[in-house]
Length: 128
Image (cartoon, rainbow, N blue to C red; front, side, top):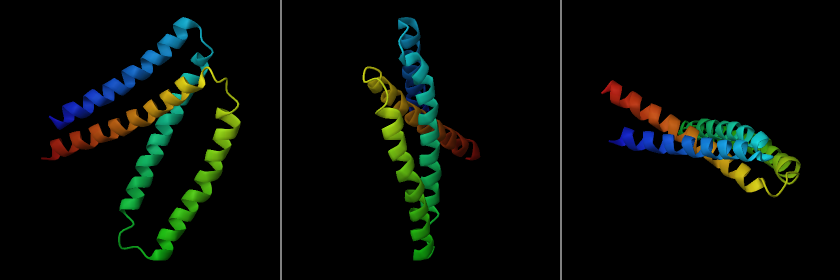
């Protein structure tokens, strides 16, 4: 039952993303160039989120210095990249296509999150 729920969420996020891209292609919108790129960026962010969460789970029992170094490096790379992305990409885009681009970016994150959750639960069911 749990796998079915995960699969439905996975399929829904992918189909919604595909619908947005097809709609932009049919309409000849300027967004047709950006939507696939933002979906890929979103899946990359979803993968990064999963890797960071797994790394944080492994921090139990580590010294304070290791934890501090991990978060310092994470923030030292993440904050400048986020600032660059916001200023040079998002603020430079046409405001008419910005909501769809951000929406598909979020859908990319959700898609990858649901995909990993689905695969993890499927693997657990196979092992039992």
